[in-house]
Length: 424
Ligand code: HEM
Image (cartoon, rainbow, N blue to C red; front, side, top):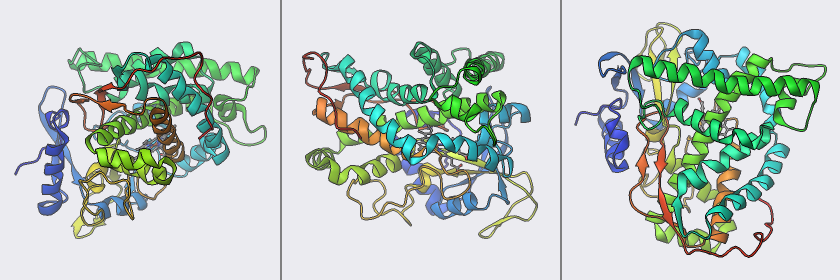
């Protein structure tokens, strides 16, 4: 069996084919060399694809041997663009540690707790908009909007910018999909990306200038002016971090929620189990949704010196290694019955938020909270909501994206405002 992870048609088809491809690699060729594909379809360069859980864990931990500074996407970009679009995910320590310690101010347990309460209100707002209709596009009308509204509220960005940010992140993370960038020529792609990044960056730079003069209780103020005696982000650092955040925080959580509804629809027994005792299964169900979805399909690292080893393999400086989380999270050596969606697993050692290491997902607690609140409110307000038809997958191999997913439910009449919730 020949597996080509760079052939994007693999990712728009049923996930059974992806599962079969990775199972084959794990069993027969766990670190294959994949040639990169350029925009015109020609092949060049390439990377070592890591498909085993143990390799991904090893590489994530060894930051001195496997660097982030050349970017986390397979394709090389000029260094200034890598940092502009990548922020901390495209840095090594000590710069990474400095900026991460500042941005972590926005992700303390207290901040995440407050956001959890707000998430319930926002989820109900979105459910209000669809409840009487009996059907909707679950992605564009619920799962994509919830994390987006949470982030823009956290940052203190006006709701009027929501549409712009939604479309901009679709273009940045879905740049390989013609639905988001129809002009597929090299020039068309470059122009679309060159316009989108700075437009996002300028939006927060303007807000940052305002917050320096008029501080508020929002994340922009905390990052730009939050520590009077210590270190804050410069407006440029804030702009780059925002570009990372809208991608890292939106595209991931939205796809976890979308894949979650799909998996619950396809596994009615698991769904009944969770719905009959939400709190008992919430923790494990969210972990299983995140494992099953593996919304970030991979991250790249670059080998820092000749002779760096991984098991019996010896690399050269500059070699690219790509950690396929989707495959690691289905590695039979670590996950029992990996292709089953099972919310009552005794152990679930998934690494969908990254394996332990300096770049472990900063928003993992927030994401878990958002997913839990989303399903709690959906089950409460629209208890028979389920996916119908086939999902429309994103044409990409970086984000495990669902662009559209139709869903149906018994319509409910809104009698005034929805009943208040109990918090997350
Ligand atoms: C289900 C949802 C999510 C998944 C699956 C996910 C996954 C990941 C992964 C795989 C990484 C890279 C880990 C590594 O390279 O070692 C990462 C990094 C990151 N994530 Fe998430 N993420 C999610 C949600 C979020 C949210 C909600 C936020 C913030 C609002 C967020 C912010 C970040 C940031 C800032 C980084 C970079 C950390 C660093 O380089 O130090 N993520 N995430």
